[in-house]
Structures are given as C-alpha cells and as structure tokens.
Length: 76
Image (cartoon, rainbow, N blue to C red; front, side, top):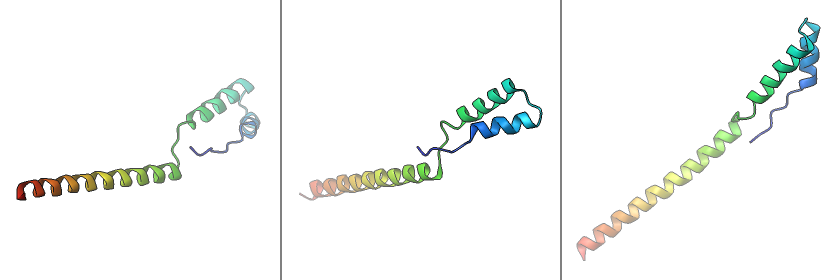
C-alpha cells in the first residue's frame, strides 16, 4: 500500500498556534494518522482491478473449455 505523507509535527504546531492545547493537538493528529493506515490509493485500486480482470478472463476461458469438452463428448 502506498504511504501518505503527513507532517505530524507541523500539524501540532499549527493547531497550537490557533489555541489548541498540546494534549488536544497530539490526540487530534494521532486520530488523523491512524485513520490513514487503511486507505486505498488510486494505484491500489488499479492493481486490484487488473487482478480481477485476469481472474475473470481465466474463469471465462475455463468455462469455454468446459463447453467445448461437453460438445465434443456429445458428438463422439
């Protein structure tokens, strides 16, 4: 998964500049950082889409192969 860059120190400094206490600023920044751990990026979604297309293609090819075998068994 791709890493999202977030300057936590800068965020804490900016929050403190507008009157947020150190404890509150630290807690707020921790919540933001933790919420970004499981985010999917556009690259992640593209990779997933490519894997699904390959799997669907394999499934369709397999189904066609089974159909051909079934037709040949009936003809022979």
